Image (cartoon, rainbow over all chains, first blue to last red; front, side, top):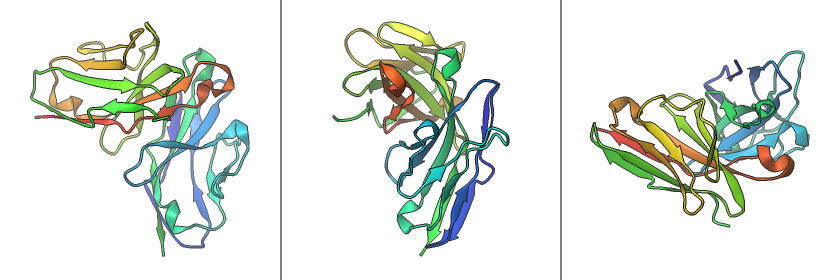
Length: 111
Length: 116
C-alpha cells in the first residue's frame, strides 16, 4: 500500500534561515509527487509537482527514488512562508489519480 | 473562474440525521474527488467520480456513505444516520479531463461537519 510520511508535525525557523520539510513515501509503482500548501484561512493549493521541476516562491523539491524522498527546500525562509505543508503522492498507475497525503508539517517562520 | 465551490461551509447535525455536502467543480472540469480530514490527520481519499460515473470508491466506508455526480448540477456526498465519528472536514477537488493536467487537483474550501 502507498504511504506518505512527514516526520515533523511542526517546524520553526528564523526568517532568512534555510528550510527543509521532509517527505518520504512508499509506493511500488512509478510515483508522481506533489507539495500542497495551506495558508491561514485559505484553501489547499498546489505548490510544486515533481515532474514540472520548477521553483515556486523560492521552493524546490527533488524526487530521490533511491531514498524514496521528496523533501521541500528553500534557502531563505520568509514570514509569508508560514503555513501548513502537505506532501502527496498520486496513484496514477491505477487510472484513479487519487492523492495519498502525509499528515502535514506546520511551518512557522519567526521574524 | 470561481474555483471549486463547496457548500455549506459548516454543517451541524444531530446523531441519526442525514448530511448532504455539495461540490461544484471548476468550470471545464469533469473529474471530482472527495477527501476527509480528521483532526491532526492528513486528507484521506474517499471517492473519485466523473459525470454520472463512480470511478473509484475504494476509500468510502461501506455503509451510510454515498456519492454522486449527476449530468447536471453539483456532486453530492451523502452521509446517512450520522454518528459522532463522522465529524470531520470534507474536501472536494476537481481536475481537468484531458492530458497531463489530469493529475493536478484543485481544492475547495471544505465543509466542516459537526455531529452533536
